[in-house]
Length: 213
Image (tube, one colour):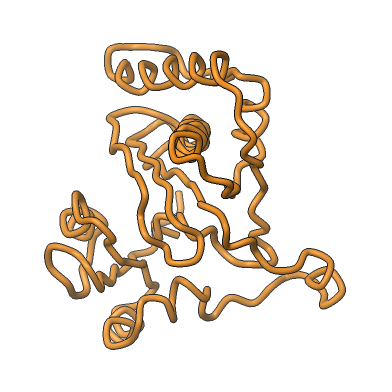
């Protein structure tokens, strides 16, 4: 088994700012902090250098990202629609600890976050994030679209069913309670919000990414 590469986490805005050497330490600074700004880096020097700079230079503009697509393909895809929110999920293991969130696509301001839950999967989190976004936009009578990087979650939402193979148990009961509520919401509500696949190869990581890659 290959050894997991160490990462360093820069926190620009949080309970404490600085460079942290573990995700647990980073998470302690950003949990329950509205508008937290953070990102992972492969080396301490890179993380330290980023701390002296602006968050949006590293995350908002996907600094260092080089598209895998041709100029013609990029032109066809175009730029993201910033009248939108972006959602994403992260799980430590699959299944494992899972959380999800939604952010403003342009500013990266966090609009909602749930978790971490003791047991869940990335697909479940992506599904819940989309439905949470749909409910929020409908409540606010917003015409914004939703970006997600999960084709699976988009399919589940369209079918109004969370088609996970994860068995229900006491550990993941809180997650499945949310799943049941999400499915019920989809079956009892109509919406006009358009759900769009985020073009990762063209634009880099989705703005709601948890920065652990």
